[in-house]
Length: 324
Image (cartoon, rainbow, N blue to C red; front, side, top):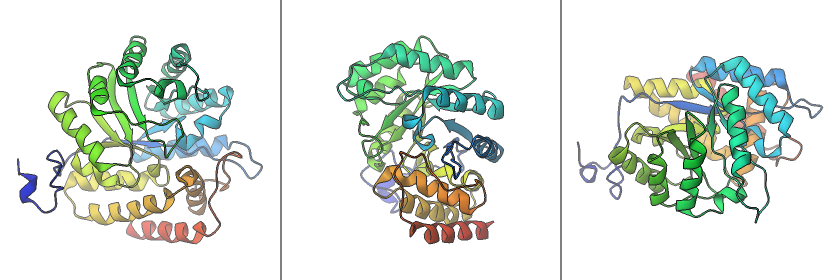
């Protein structure tokens, strides 16, 4: 294997950061939960977004941050699962949201119940962070997930940075290594927005458990797939078919990959600027501009972007369509 220090295209400080051409990328895409002009959940629009994600060849991820999981009522989260199962069968993943407050204790029973709901509907649980769970130190965090794993066939871990939610936390590499020791853990979404931390996880994965999926959640560096990451992204909710096409170009060794990736990355850098949670409003605007949903409304308690975002997003949408 080529020494990255002799290749100017490689980051010299991270020997694990080697470009891996021709690799098949496994893509998971969060799905936006759309709203009508009246401020109600657009369930028909949601089912259509799910279908488009599946038809693109990506695995839909529901009840994630992109789906306002923290703001939904229990009955709404359950209907999301029912809709996902109706559209995707057993081909989806879903967040195990547990609502709590700062200072609350970790609630394993609530997590187990959420995981059971997901499994009963055919999905794979993603262990969404909570105040109680992320208050645990590294060894206890791993132990908690190992115990939850005893009741499921498969699950996906999740490191979420505080720029997304106030109770987010990125653990050290020793804790991440603990996830690799849990057989039921298929992989873990990593949302630190740091290339260096993700490269470290890729090196650890390669050394200890090559089948473990490092799922990038770095919407500011979607080219992490070039280095061996797969993905579970919110950005791909804007245009799942374009992400899937980009992925196929990489597998085929087609240099057009870079043009597609650059434009999608421009969209990510624009939409995921501070305050980051408002990216969901940009997603709604973008999908509305493309005729995919009937309204650009968001959840009534979600942050919004200024109207000046609309022409920028319209230009990006036009440029994506021009690519093919």
